[in-house]
Length: 360
Picture (cartoon, rainbow, N blue to C red):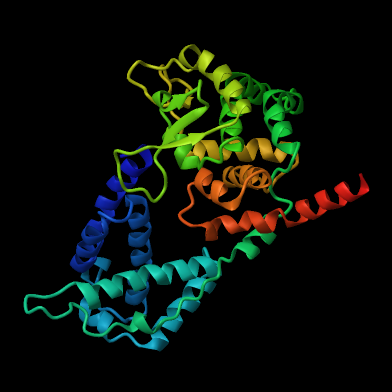
């Protein structure tokens, strides 16, 4: 099991103890099919829902664990409507339409299991009436809409190389009067450039980067092995290719990984961080990588750029030179429907290329 899944499995085991017995049973049922990370999000959604039920007087339980099946059975459409409004308009942390849809989908999965799959001692469904079966969840996250939101917020053409170069050299000039920032940059610039280059030249997800071990890299064949999202076979790592640029940047980092980050022999992680006062480097966290990219992006003049948008940047560039099926495989998408966003993103680029051809 990869590092992030191990962490999420521990959190899941802790949180599920605060859930009603039938939620614990549902999680056990789903464990072979869904990752601990996904199920952890489910449990968080149920925490919100059960807490809302209790605050609205729709459950007499003193805590979430005490919510009963009978209380779920008597819910009405007006209650579900009120919950949707609560999610979309609550003062602290109002949810987007996409998030509301996902949270309702989590509830639908639970209610479906309780009413259609789980049985009591007499072989009757645990939940006799399923209010969530009446809820239609429309698909909101369309590729064309996603593409429209991404335009102007990703790196295009020469910017991919320019951003890596900025991390290596340009950033230092911008913070030359800040000794602390300058020191941190001098210490980590090769590592930061290597991480950025790897994503921009392979399209890896940040979780896949975090989970990389030194032994996962095959520099000669420009290939690495990763645990892909959605693949629940914990013994299988998917081979993913990267471009020559990433090979050069990886070699520059690997040449100093051992000495600069004081990597202990037992530490397998590829990308390390050495915290102040620590004698040994440790695996870099997802949050640290995200913060690192945002730091450079703001100075580079791309404040909307994030780790995931680096992946989008690679995918858009890759799609211009390959078909949708190769792009799907490179990115590890479950279906070409997800990959369609890059077809919309490249519409403008393709039309401009045709015009340049005519002018020539």
